[in-house]
Amino acid sequence: MCSACVKEGAFMKALVVEKPGTLSVRDVAEPPMGEYEARCEMLYGATCTATDLAVIDGRVGWEKLEYPLILGHESVGRVVEVGSKVRNYRVGDLVARVYTRETDGLKLAWGGMAEFGLALDWKAMWADGVPREKWDYFRVNQVIPEGIISPMDATMIITWRENLSWVNRMGVKPGERVIVVGSGGNGMSIAACAAVKGASVTVVGNASRREATLSTGIGEFLDYKDKEALTSFIEKNRRGIDCIIDATGKKETLTPYMPTLREGGTASLYGMSDFTSYTIGPTGGPKYFRFFNSYAGIYDEAETHDEVIDLIRAGKLNASAWIDHEHIFTWDNAAEAYEHVRNKKAVKAVIKLSR
Image (cartoon, helix red, strand yellow):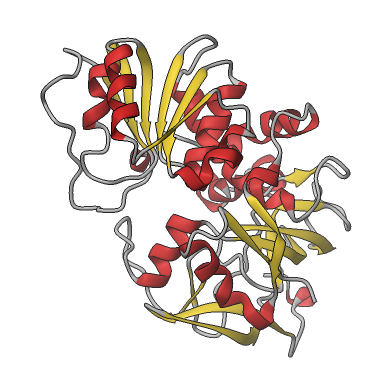
């Protein structure tokens, strides 16, 4: 650490999950800034509905978490100070996915919901020969060009980068037909990313999300409760679909749609609600198909940063379908943001983190 960069006695607010089911806003010590780090004033943080609610509720299955912890990972910050070895950030830069560090005995569920965070200059560390394991995780810290998107809407860049990497690695091609089951934040984003790659996309989801989903450029939306329409769709598209994506993570979700999948097509699971097992029924599907599992680490969010920036510039990705601009939360009611999305009043809620 850079001792000259430690701000003695500096405190900041952070959103803390004290224990499963209990959220609070605490004043915590601001962590010191290292020589390869840029200190950022956090501007906005968005709720990641599935992941954040799993952390809040104590339903995390991908790793063992220690409480209390600082929540959040869809946050953006603006650089206000840089360490002595930083060469790729300048004061004033807007940076994606900035986190704080462990402080005051608090662990992290990434730690993006805080007043200040630290962006790592991983490019400088790479150039200086620092071992990759010291910086690889922080490749998600990347500069967002000024003027192409508001800081509030820039919180969506984290989701888009991750989902676009997933779509790219599955090999979705122009003209292919894709079904996305699920109309939450990730489901809508995966569908939008497949559409910008030139695929013809059908989303099966909650009727309340129809308008928002279609506004992202999706060609067709089916209400998951409309059994007659779903049965008709499946019958008309037997062996005609190239890729089916389950964005709900619920057992057996893919099974009813397997008759539509072509031989050698792709079935994929993005996220899980039950981490003990996942089942695809054995009858009705193709003789052989590929299976992609997001928990096998198949995507790399950092690799698609430039592509997402280009899509934003081209007007092909717009945050308005996801972000609730009418209800902006603050430190005074930060916990309510999660109840807002839990009750499906918005796809994503945003908390203003700056002072």
